[in-house]
Length: 487
Image 1 (cartoon, rainbow, N blue to C red):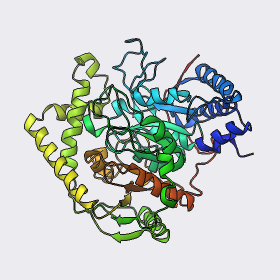
Image 2 (image 1 turned 120 degrees about the vertical axis):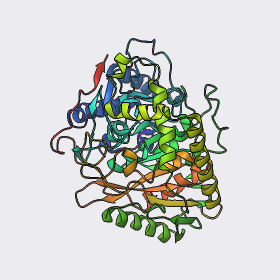
Image 3 (image 1 turned 30 degrees about the horizontal axis):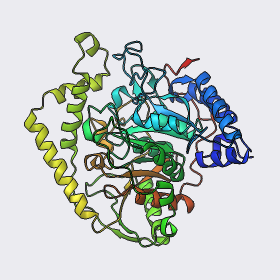
Image 4 (image 1 turned 30 degrees about the vertical axis):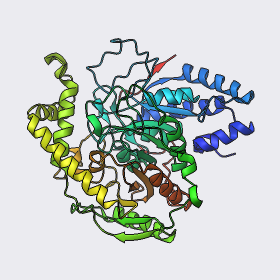
């Protein structure tokens, strides 16, 4: 039988239904994998094995009775330690958040929907402090390493979730994305991740980063992400900016009208018009993905959307949000913050209301331009990242001329500003054996188009062979305090 760790959520559910496998077996296997990967990769910030096994036993009983609670009953999942999950603290990677400071008795909307559908919660995954940067290290949990080489970064800010999924510690994870935070680590770790249209997945409490912040699935493939989206896109009154429930299901959309990409109008932009410096191996792998889309019947044209790099406007919005996060802190707690976070918070606090509104103007113009572009093209394809994973524990690659993480993520943050759905699909390995991702972007509300195209690429074998070495075979481990156990 296929190793349990290699099974997707869809495959687990098929085996639960046939009686071939039990949620208890799947959960025990996931928890054992967590133990194996923690010393090297440090993907989890908190693990509650006792609660997970209790949930798995309850799920097994429902499956024996032929009464599964929902779409993911018995599937092991993890949750980024930015999102509330009742039963334990959400520290957000910060020493300024007290574990005993509140009751911790509320789920975020996406977590609540997973719970209603019978998911088994393994624990919380690592994040940089308040999710502020594109790599994963924090004053609380230390450094999270890459599944392919723990001396390198997993990316961020949902790096723990990406590493967990890549290494088989549960097939599903919830991440957040304010500037690329599910897509960056998905590309670096060789998994699938979707940043949905803003509001498609309800969020509560509201993010200090405002409408840049999205919640999205991080999974082994697009079919699992569609399954997860059918769960987490359920409405929640706590988010006043949520969208109306989607028409039809995301799983059905994968094969609607025969599925595939035949007839889709695809724009391929190798550098997004920003003269981004893309590693030749990355460019070649993305080109192969584009060629595959064409071979599958898509109409492909190499063209840029004609937008300018909005990084300065993004910085104004992002740094202002960071300053708002830490505004309540006194001087004593201010000293506990990640030094890089302190720098951007100070910059954010210096902006005026007019500075902020000017950035909003740039954002609106960008959204208008992309709306016009997608009236002619169903899908925009770019590299997810211009590089592969670099040394862990630093914000920017050593030797580069970048000063902030946005310098090496030119393909991700623009689509947080426009609120468009965007996904990263594994499309190969570099000569050093590191994953490369291709980004698929569609018009607002066209999440199903992104998922359908990604699914077609998986079905055609684009991601075949993109798997990390077995735990224990990846060399020196990342340093960190590791997960705290509960139960």
